[in-house]
Length: 254
Image (cartoon, rainbow, N blue to C red; front, top):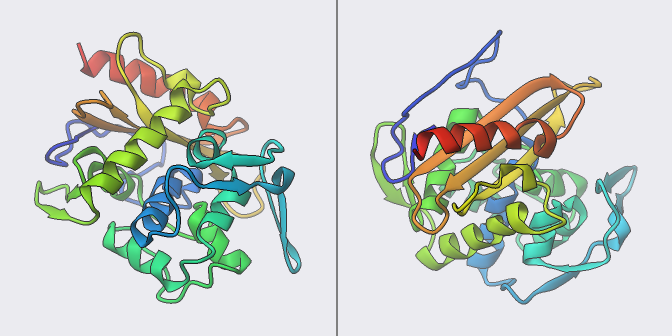
């Protein structure tokens, strides 16, 4: 749990051998930053619609799949259903700009990113980067505070335009409020929540997942960034982590 306006940790808790400072594959919780990069580059706007190709896109011997088939969606819809295919297509025009943007947002990324390849697509949907839960939660402070990234020390620096942060935060509300959103279990009565689910394999070849949810609340006047990550489960972030977020958020907002 971080203070959304300063980045300072208010609570860090872990169980087992999990360490909030250890880098790992985060999955779809980095997608909002791919959206931010595309918005800042001017290659899309909130009215842009993309064909999700019914949830399957092939890059040579690699295939990107969505958890459900979708046709054409706008940006809010893409983020709500967490389409890997549409996120990959969203960043295709960016090339190395995607890596540059990620590094500006304080997320690690390769120097060269071919966004028309499987490897580049994987960066955009969170399978081709590694970041610790604390680093990722800190990155979300930029979305919560109008483009100002707050380090854990409290130092702040502008990393994206204010309008970009505001737009992405609004898109993230659809993840929680839309009937097709993957983060519906993060809803709070009378309080707006903006967030993103994530599901990645615990480790290569594993049949277990690292399921996570990162949320900003209240979304209309952010006070907290809360990240919940649960390793070794068979379910997705929306099922495993989002309900825990809701419990924690309800407590800190009292």
